[in-house]
Each structure stands twice: as C-alpha cells, then as structure tokens.
Picture: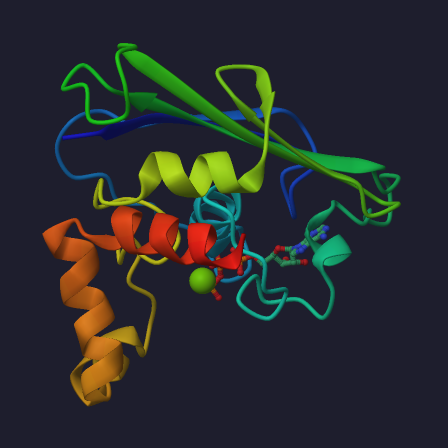
Amino acid sequence: MVFLRQIDAHGFKSFADKVNIKFDSGVTAVVGPNGSGKSNITDAIRWVLGEQSARVMRGAKMEDIIFDGTDNRQSMGSASVSLILDNTDKVLGEKDEVIITRKLYRNGDSEYFINNEKSKLRDITELFMDSGLGKNAYNIISQGQVDEILKAKPLERRKLIEEAAGVMKYKSRKLESEKK
Ligand code: ATP
Ligand code: MG
C-alpha cells in the first residue's frame, strides 16, 4: 500500500509559510476552529493529484488557490504543494519514496514534477491509475460523496468498479491510441 508520509505546502490557500504536515501510521485527526484550514489540507492532496476543477477546489477560478494575502501579509505569486509518498510496497514504480509536486503561478502557468523531474499531468494520472490513488479514486471522501456513490447511475458505478479492478489504465491507453 502507498502511504502518504508528508505534505509540503507553500503559498497554497491559507498556507502562506512553508508548512510540512507529517503523518504517522495509524489514524490522524486534524482538529481546529472553523476556517482554520483543515479542509485546505485535503484540498491540497486533491490538487496535487491533478484536480482541474476550481469549483471542487472551492474557488471561482484556479488562481484562488494561491495565498491571496491578509491584513498584514502580502499575497503570493505562486502556490506549490508536494506529496511525499512511502512506496516501499512498489505500487508506484521502483523507488522507495515518490514525490509528486504541482505548482501554479498567477499568470496561469502550471507545472508538475515527479521526483523533482518536470512531468506532465498525464504522467501523474498514469502513475496513479489502478493504484487505488488519484483524483478520481475515492481516497478522499468529502461530505455528500457517500450519497453520490449510492445514487450513481449504472455507468458511473461501472467506472468505480473498473478503477477498483485495475482496468482503467488499459482503457485510457486504448482511447489515446484510437485518437491518433
Ligand atoms: P470548517 O471547520 O468550517 O470546515 P476548515 O478548518 O475546514 O473550516 P478551511 O475551509 O480549510 O477551514 O479554510 C478556510 C480558510 O482558508 C479561510 O479562512 C480562508 O480565508 C482561507 N483561504 C482559502 N483560500 C485562501 C487563499 N487563496 N489565500 C488565503 N487564505 C485562503
Ligand atoms: Mg472544513
């Protein structure tokens, strides 16, 4: 199993300072007052996994995820988040540790990195496909999503089963090659 060891965020939503959020094995609970940034942590995970919808990120436009300043602190020009994943079970290739990074600049430029090597969103999507991870893989269950799964139409439910069964990668490659 892949284990999320640490999240490094800088300039992402309320995380203006460079923050390192470390997870130990077992259950982790994040507690804090309303608006203190608990949900911003799960937003950060979704975002690195490739979320493209500003609405899912709870904003109007993607730029809204960049720290936009407070009364006594200037807004920032970019946001960066890294997920440090324990891959000793070799689900995501051969390395013991996999680091996925996404950056966004105010001019709209976006960058992805796998182990500090510049990559494309597609590389990240492929890396996670069939691993049980990724932005569509139900690692993060938000409020209301349990209902959504229960009420899903047969075709949507089939996608869920296909991802769990590990056939998505082949389907996606087939579609890609048919386009060419
Ligand atoms: P609740 O208990 O109500 O669910 P929470 O702890 O989950 O709260 P979040 O929704 O994670 O809180 O955090 C919201 C906070 O993040 C707000 O204070 C908001 O101002 C701040 N925030 C969101 N986007 C940005 C941004 N781009 N720049 C600065 N702060 C931001
Ligand atoms: Mg919240």
